[in-house]
Image (cartoon, rainbow, N blue to C red; front, side, top):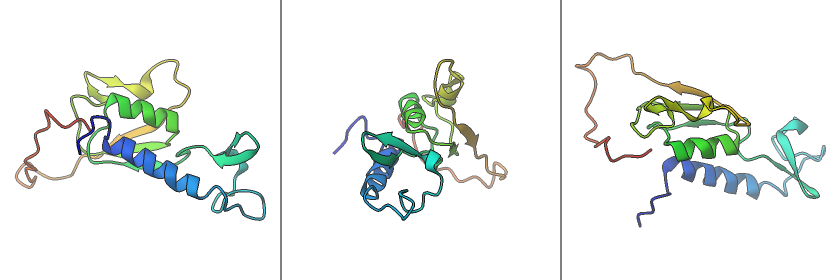
Length: 136
């Protein structure tokens, strides 16, 4: 079923949140979650210590995230975003140069990388996707 807010980036954030939530009760001998060795990677949530959503994780996606998804990535604290197809509605600079991570007043920034294949025009395969309608 189609839902206008079910963008791939938001789905990835949601999936990572569910995964991290499933690990909450698996703490190691140091009181940290399994796989977490640095206490600064955990945030306080009342009396329980849980990792902050997506802290220090990297997102790989085919299309540039839209502005809404880029703000969700700011709030979820990713460290880097890689994409390969710039979009007119993109929040990493594709939407008339609008780059969410470049806005003043935001409390987190992540690095953005656009992967450009090292192929000639003859070697590129047309993907038959209407980029006017894809939002990310």
